[in-house]
Structures are given as structure tokens and as C-alpha cells.
Image 1 (tube, rainbow, N blue to C red):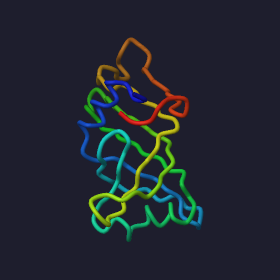
Image 2: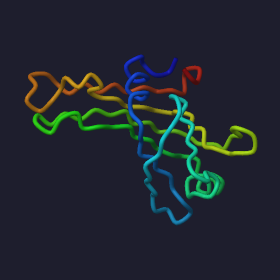
Image 3: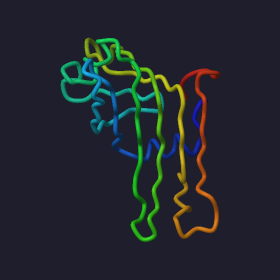
Image 4: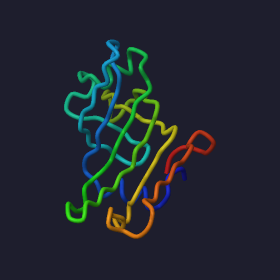
Length: 137
């Protein structure tokens, strides 16, 4: 398992992520997405017609995904899981192609929601290199 139990639980509790890919112009493109699992399968409405798969088909396989939420404004309490990945197109449900992300590096912080600027301890950040371990859940 490449993600911690806390990271998997947090990812599964969040309905939306932010996905970034790069088209041939070099201008990063960020879009909200829904996802399935911690291997991160990303489809959507007419998934093969969006910029996401076009960017990957054009050879820009490096992508990023952020799952985050603001648990509280007072005190300000941010939680997140950020993942650098490679993306590829896979068949899903017959002839539909969706993106499958393969994590390279991830960072997570404050998934328990206990840290805030008023806290007496340092903001916890967990960094993980996923290239040295088997993939998937």
C-alpha cells in the first residue's frame, strides 16, 4: 500500500479534487474533478473530449492532483493531499477511456484537522516517494 490509512480515508471522504495537466502551449490547466480510489481514476462527462486526455495523448503525462478542504475559518484549519503523478488512458466500462494516475510523490498534511495557526505544535507534513513500492491500494 503506497498511501497511509489516514490518506486513503481522507481521499475517500472528499468528493472533489483539483487536477492539473499541461497542454502543448505550456500553460498549466487546472480543473475540478471527481475521482475513484487512490489510484485516481478520472473520467467525467465525455471524458475523451476534455483537455485532460488531450494533454496526455499529446505526450504531457506529468500531472498533479490536490484533494483539500478548509475544515474551519476560525481557527484557519486546512487539510490536503497533493500528488504528483503520471497519467495514462485506460479502458473503463466498455469503450470509455478514462485517465489513470500513477503516483510518483505525495504530500499530506493535517488530515486529522487538529493543527491550526494557534496550535502549539508544528504543522505535520508527510512526504512519500511512491516509485519504490508496489502500486495501488
